[in-house]
Image 1 (tube, each protein chain N blue to C red):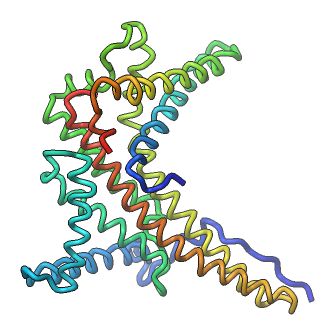
Image 2: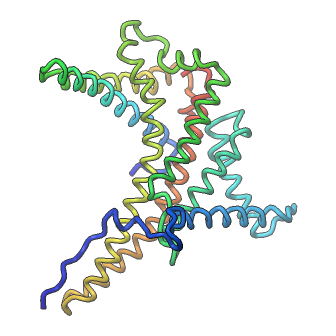
Image 3: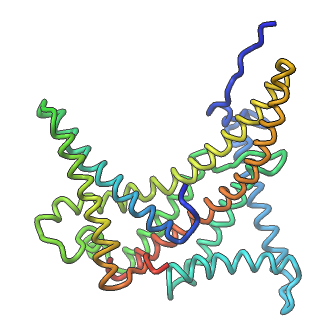
Length: 254
Length: 75
C-alpha cells in the first residue's frame, strides 16, 4: 500500500523538450511566441481591413484595444508627444497580453513570459528607447546631469545621492521591469500546477482523500480566472511603466 | 501585489529608489568591510542607503510635487 510521495511542481516543469528535432528554438514557449505574433497580426489586420464609419464588432474590438493604449496609457502618461510612441506601446501591450493569456487558454496553458528570457528581451527594447529618447532630446551630458543632480539639494549631499540615482535609472528600473513580469507569470503558473497536480494525486489516493480533490480542482479553476486578471494587469503595468519611463526621459526636469 | 491603478508608477519608483539606495551603499559598506577587515561598515552603508532612498522619495514626491506637477505624477 505504499503510496509514492507527492512530487510538487518545480521550476523544472517550465522546461520543455523540443517539439521536433533537437534545436532549442523548437520548444513550446518559442512556438507559442510565434503563434502569438500570428494571432495578433491576424486579429488587427482583419479588424482594420474594412474600416467603416459604423464599425463591425471585430473592428470595434480592435479599436477598443488600440484606443485603450493610445489614450489610456500613451496620452495620459506621456502627454503631447505621445503619438510617436503609440505604436511601440501598442506592440508591447498586445504582445505581452497575448503571451500571458496563453497561461489559461486550454491546451496551451503556458504563459510564455514565465521564461525570463522573454521579459528581458522586451525590457531591453524599452531600456534602449527611453535612454535614446532622452539622449537625443537633451544630449548625454545634460541627461546625466539632470538625472543625477536634482536641483535644490546641498552640494555635498550629491556625493551620496548621485550614484543612487544613476543606479536607479540604469540598473534597478530595467531589472524590476523584467523581474516583475517574469515573477508574476512564473508564480501564477506554479500555483495552477500545484493545485492541478495536487488534485490529481489526491484522486489516486485513499477514498476519504478523494473528496478533497474536488476542492483542489475547484481552486485550480477559480485561480485560473484570478490568473487571467493578473495576466492582463501585468501586461498593463509593464506598458504603463514603459510609458512612464519615456515620459520621464522627455520631461525637461525632474 | 500592487493594484493596477496609475499610482503603480509611483509605487515602483519608490521601490526602485529603496533598492538602489540599499544596494549601492550597502554594497559599498560590504566591500569596505571585506577589504578593511572590519564589521560595521555594512550596517552604516545600509542605513545610509536607506536614508538616501527615503530622501530621494521625499524630494521627488513631496517637495517637488508642491512646487510644480511632475509629469510622472500627473495621474
